[in-house]
Image (cartoon, rainbow, N blue to C red; front, side, top):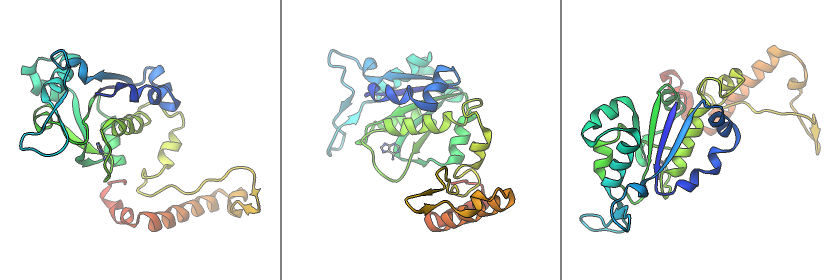
Amino acid sequence: MRIDVYTIFPRIFQSPLEEGLLGKAIRRGLVEVRIHDIRDYAPGKHRQVDDAPFGGGPGMVMKPEPVFEAVTRTLGYRLEELERLKREVSVIMLTPRGERLTQAKVAELASRSHLALICGRYEGIDERVLQHLCTEALSIGDYVLSGGEFAALVIIEAVTRLLPGVVGNLESLREESFSGGLLEYPQYTRPAEYLGWKVPEVLLSGNHGEVEKWRRRMALEWTRRMRPELLNEGDKGEGG
Ligand code: ADE
């Protein structure tokens, strides 16, 4: 999989892309991530990427030209070839106005071959970018970030761990929260007693059937308490 990211803050991505499972996947070539500075594609001496909103109002709006230029030039398309670009690459705008990200959506993204993630600033990005350059808009949740950079990292992280070969133990993907439409059961490790708090007896019993039953019951209880709406969504296969 290849992921191209467009941002005016490229340095935000440096260390997150080097650490942990994600860093390892990149070094192993399982995913290729390229970060592009939108400012490099802004014309003029001042490399201006934003301007006042038409119609008035607070804040600045990101100009369309540098974004169109950055995406088409780095991906090797002409501005006249946007339709072909959009057929070949999923161009995704990160914005709280977008469709809300779920594990099911993450899995769908992981099946595509090439993503382009556009990080707007919260005040806004000229709507023509969304209308004519993007294939979709995604939000990582109902809260507001100052820009799409951290949302892009969330998508890169969540998608990469579903790519073949990234997570060694496939069992751990299957068991984790949302994959069965439930939140995950609680986990314990040694010591069996710490400051007087004991690990549930059944987990020490060696009885796999009982352990499985307990885990299922805990997953259900926890889901009912924290996210009751997931229990009703289960049949629709939304997975979270
Ligand atoms: N940009 C600002 N807030 C965002 C959010 N919640 N999701 C995606 N992009 C954003």
